[in-house]
Image (cartoon, rainbow, N blue to C red; front, side):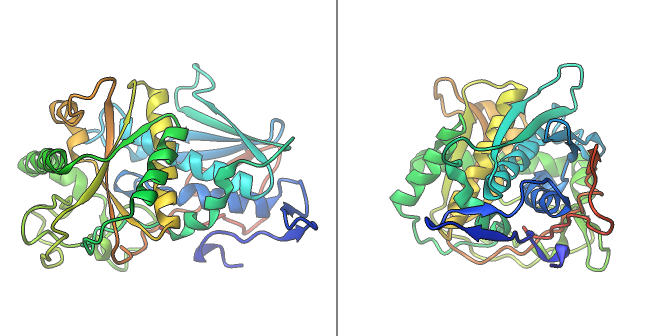
Length: 362
């Protein structure tokens, strides 16, 4: 198995009921590789991958920490988007743990004396049926952000209902607005885009995460996957190039009637941000499993007044992210750092030499 080609494959044996289980309950290098490959496949703002992982053998727990070396001081001063990104990685860990036959037990913000420790995922022996989200494991590798135009074909209500239910299970809400509210949300996003481009420092921070062909950098967004601008100006996709001399792809016509969904929580604490990140990834994987493409419109969430306006006067609504979804082309893969580059380490056990747990999917 070539770790750099995608999610690690796991050996199975089958019972008469065709229920998969692992050949071993040992947390060895292959298991760690599978878990880390799934975790780092999560989406993150600007593909900063702002996480570090550690294995505590004594408690059979994967610790997930924030990595402030890849923070965005201007776009994300409170680290809210960083928590969303880490939450998405935590959900992928949960899916992979269940896929391998364990039950994942998650503690968010487990130690107030370690503020960078955002979550711990303990691998426990299941006493009953495994979590129902394990069926999403194949979607972890297939999920890619698509910044390309969609066809405009509506996503069926049944699929949208599954996406909404996915967010609700994780303690968040996914609101699909009507036509007028959709225009308002896209207008707020466009206003945020204009503000971002008006500030040279913001432009520079965003451009710093664009990578050009041949650089072989495991973070950031390759120039080749940026996607075009909307020739009609209706879809405010983030322009990562800004006033850079590096030209972006030519403008294209996007879908006339966008389908978007607003992810929100009832409160706005660090724990809520982590739950929202898990809800986000569960929604994205559910969409992927049904062949639906997704992209994130986060710009309005980066400005307090625009984020407040995005609540659409809903009670107990703290907007976290706007998701665009529909049918269209694959947006292309963005790089992923190896588990070691992402800060993977073990306490009491370690991966076999040469096994990096790398994933390049999504």
